[in-house]
Image (cartoon, rainbow, N blue to C red; front, top):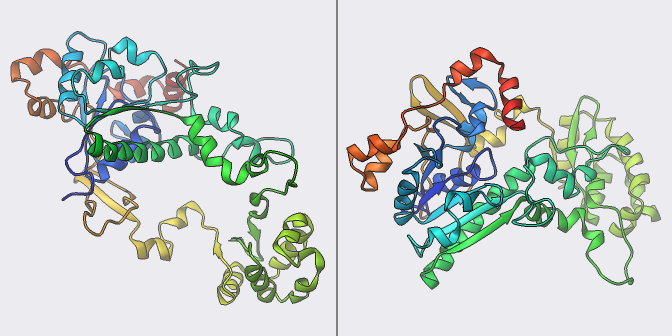
Length: 413
């Protein structure tokens, strides 16, 4: 066995992050994932992040554990290839805008003619219909609509979370949705269509804490500050730490750690509910006290009193963090002596069906085209006719415009 999804075959038509990262996770878990890209207009992620050779780091991180088939879906003969792959696959996934699948002849009614057990996952930004459904969508738009940018506000100014959060939570939800559908297929012997929108995923993600003041219907309840109001970086004498004390025992531990046990008898802070109602006053007192200690001393004091805390790492400190090293969270992947990278290991550790500790290096554009087509019954002669030998040259493109210019042009097209 090479992971719990060993034997599952996935066709990945998606681009950037929301779909590709889901495919990569399934590939890490043993699935045979074939990424299909146009030979002349490949995944834009190949241009994103630090470039080495002809590939960007964003693509490398979101597309490991895959094989690559270069294929222009709009060209004559491309459908023959796709339909043949569908016959031999378990999953086909995309993140096209609504209407594109119909133009390509790849709606669920089309693909299930070739494989009634196929599972089709389609990721959209806002959904398959509705006033926003035709928009081109990137992560910040979903952060805006789902209220995420508002929750990050400083004063009256909304802020975006500085990561592609909606893309990535959609990818994780996508992978889970596919595996759930695979489980259902074991019972029904039938495939199905999965429609997954980034907006719905973001709302599901946000609701339990950021939106809990909108949960109860009726008027027999009182709104309270969001839990996130408690979570501000704690400034110390020499840096910052994260510190979370929610229940009574944790709050008592904090007071003991900073030698302010007098707060335990203050009526404003005597219970968790009282502390939530008086969070601003409480934070003013505590934040001043924290500055009297160094980060290391404060975390040690919190550990001694069983209070959750951690030093806030800078990005260049994360890889060398003692717990990260203990978990062997970062692995090195090599293709040859000129192509190596590091990235996180697959996070789930399976006792019976462990994932490979040496996942496949990201594929070059069209690297496995011939190999994949031969496996699916195409002859050498057919392959030479069906697969275009024309491919984009990133090196040529970058000779005429900077990477930033190129990315901006691609995003605006």
